Image (cartoon, rainbow, N blue to C red; front, side, top):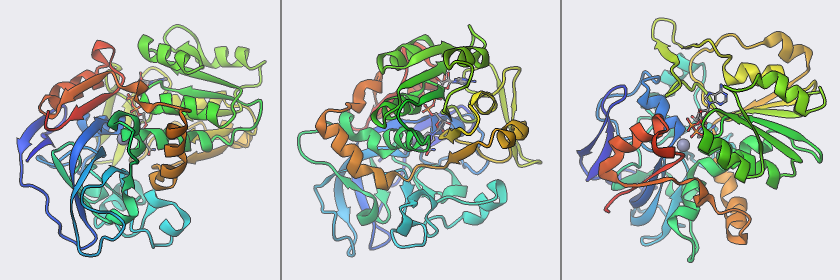
Length: 390
Ligand code: NAD
Ligand code: ZN
């Protein structure tokens, strides 16, 4: 089959690789119909994650049709149309039983690597390097899905791929990030970043009852899309974000702040380096990174929600402000499984049509262009969907 393979920093190729096979009785194999490129893939593309190997298959946002199931798979059948959650969960460990599926204890055989680098390991994740299990990803014609009965979400008839694909990651991620803001009536939420994750976070914050959302970025079409979603916007290159937020909140600061940027360096003219000796990600920038700015802007007693991805050690967190303002921080890889039912309902009710973020639809073969376009936000790009077999 054809698959998008990592070939080193800033290089992916579409290679011919062996088809995936059932290797465990709880596996399924799916034929992929749609798969997306995520901001998280850019951390791999940037070369931030030290445990990628040449030839690793990328991709964790994918859906398709089940073509084969292992002997112990009961709920999922050949022919089912399914969306796959990006974290792999066993369904019965201490964490899965509490719906903390991205923290599953049983799906990362290489947890020792993640522990050495990050201090702890989340679950295994599709297409996300050897320290997160070394699982082949879904930017491919086919993928093997372990624990198929636990993970795969069956899609009812009448919904298009583009309406449901983002249940795999960015819709639940935006939603969990908004839930983590502990929104109450009257609350103002400020969101750093207007990428795909933030676009869902903005709309989720309103679904959860936020009165106002203020979104921060510098890319005009991303700011416009945030505005279309009901947010007030700030261009961080035009205004002093901290001062502007004070002014917009009567001097108090937003009730909750969200970092939907993460260790962003791509396309920003910033240098982001993974320092192997120190096992740390070092961002060299003359601008305050989003997280630092968010902590400083949050009102006293407020909440800091961090869906943005970090690895290794990141310094210059203003702990003094964080402690003395009595802030709460909530973060994590998204527990995608627990959001399938409620978010599918929102889609079916017409509360939201997630396809609004898609700006680029490309055949799988054009994945190298897709990565470059998404990384550098060329051609008004917000989200790229790859279509295998087209
Ligand atoms: P993206 O790279 O497309 O978007 C990031 C946006 O942040 C860009 O529009 C960029 O212009 C903007 N930005 C950069 N620096 C900024 C700053 N200082 N202030 C304000 N805006 C700034 O990525 P995305 O797909 O939207 O993902 C966003 C983050 O969420 C990434 O770190 C990604 O890894 C992470 N993510 C986390 C999870 C999870 O489970 N927690 C899941 C998916 C993605
Ligand atoms: Zn993703």
